[in-house]
Length: 551
Image (cartoon, rainbow, N blue to C red; front, side, top):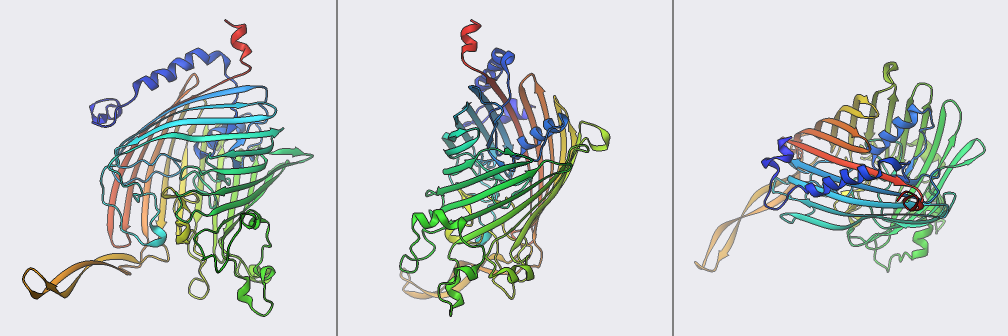
């Protein structure tokens, strides 16, 4: 622990805020007697595992919350929640942590503090989270990559020597009636059942501002639970194209044994920088309506004699979800499958359903080997370039440069492994009410098909030297693209997550050891380690009259 609390953690620019930690313990002691359930479920997949463990132990349905954040509809009587969080990182190598929202953990020491207040009643829900984040962001050997790989998590989009960000990480305001309503937010979203990756939307980068309409949790209608939403955003200048983002998403849960959930999300990135206005000028109304258009291109054909008139100018991602949960055994099996292009018609789709296809496949098992505190799981994500890439437009995921390759503030908002990749995640461990010990292993490949490297070469040429008045041989470094070998870049990570709960305070210790082979697709190697300590407590209390009655 000297690494975090002793001299090794000290830095001329960064110091641990022990006062913030003391405040966490103070508020915990003051409010321990008035703890209630949380107001909403966040996008963070680490919190999903905790919530599912608790629900499974209570034998409640854990197939819900396919789309997060979602509000806790069972907690509507003027309930306030106050969350305090402090994170401290020591990273010996390149930035490589995924699904960390706004926390871009560069090399060296980083720290994050936030205070989140939320409120919910029969008609209103809101949350606000001021934050402070600092990172030494020390220099390291930045990988040299081309186009679709420039937004990988080990890149360096923030070039300052050190980083110091302050502001509002999360703001949500929703007016609703029994969970159905309208709202504005910049909170991270997560769409899908996965705990490590999502094709459409994850918290790999921090949230963007958006408007949402529909249900904000599952609604019980007879034997079916329904969740339907519409999301729209005008992305700001953190995305170079400043495009529109519009999406519809829905899920249907059938209460049975097993419990099945079917889901669908269709999202568009459109307009602003893709084509000149003289070619096509997308209006705000058209951008809003894109997710409701026909599924197949032949229905969009303007000129019946010209098939090319049906080409969709914008970037669509269509994803389906299937989840099966077996309450008696604590087993959850899920599939997420998506396409990043338009099929021409139904015949085209059924002949090549895997063209531009990507998927997340996994299972989680609670009460493993009959022990209520043992959990395990496996998840595989594949965004490997279509096998038809040599004969048909490949439909490579996250490939539009004008939209910064589906990234926001330097990172993908979808799967963290990026285009033409796959990712295997395995975990097994102990999860109790007060103690958690979960080792895991991650095997990730980049550029499985498209693995050309960028090479810095020295070009010699004859140039005039005005100082000598002579023509002389001069040299210049140029970057060329060629295949050095046929292998993808491989990243292997061993992880260990230890959690301790003292009263209502969660203390988490996280260690990750990363090894990269064939770095930049040209035989390079890299190794790094991350140590992470987190303090987190959530204080919930009912009507403020409690304090008046208990003075």
